[in-house]
Amino acid sequence: MSLLQVRNISKSFGGVKAVDDVSFDLPAGQLLALLGPNGAGKSTCFNILNGQYRPDAGSVLFDGRRIDGMKPRDIWRLGVGRTFQISATFASMTALENVQMALISRERKLFQLWSPAASLYRDEAMVLLEQVGMAAQAERACGVLAYGDIKRVELAVALANRPRLLLMDEPTAGMAPQERNALMALTKKLVVERNLSVLFTEHSMDVVFTFADRMIVLARGQLIAEGDGDVIRNHPKVQEVYFGS
Ligand code: ADP
Ligand code: MG
Image 1 (tube, helix red, strand yellow):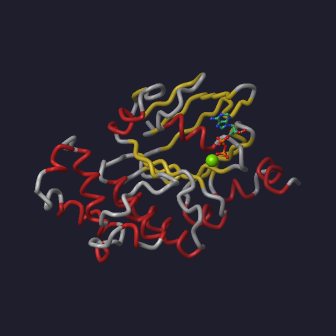
Image 2 (cartoon, protein in one colour; image 1 turned 90 degrees about the vertical axis):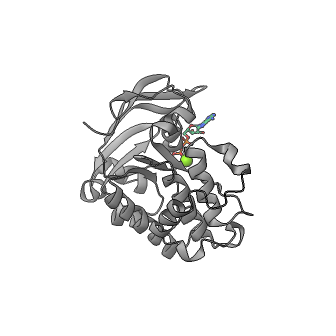
């Protein structure tokens, strides 16, 4: 059984069918790319999966359990993490403090933020920063970090909740090609090391073909193709959407 099972989900805004009868599976330990031109319905899919939107029809099963219509907080608690396009770290806090706070929040011990225990979850936070390659910059304020490094801290923050599925909508937006590749290589490493499942969107086909295990393609809300790099590259419907041929 796949970790994530999406079955016939639809979502309309007024007369626009943003997502139209979409179904797909995401097994554990796979990096799945969600492709499609602007307005194809990718973000709407993400927002259904993370609980922001309730689908008009269809169902979403995570680990065999229906999560469609559940509150975002409850879906997060089950182990569905996400990264945000706008930075979700606190600029005046250090990288370490940001991850410590995420760990405190996971344990629902927010009252401890006001306790003098600055060492709370310090070791665990350092392990996470190590995993994303940010241990050396742990004591620096996030506000002074390079953009790509902030994204790494955000990954550590997302991992603090021990997600089994991570949703990343345009994680490399605004990044230079080298930074993009580095972030996706890191994501791929985490997928393998943690048996994590990741669903992500990405504009650069180079990045997608290099790192994704599998791809699904949306156009006008509908899923038009699914498969590995070779299948997607040669798929007539994908060619039509991307190259108008
Ligand atoms: P993508 O992320 O692939 O660019 P979106 O999911 O953001 O696509 O949008 C799919 C379609 O749904 C677009 O036509 C968009 O204008 C519309 N849409 C998305 N969100 C809303 C909303 N909150 N209200 C109205 N229309 C929306
Ligand atoms: Mg989008």
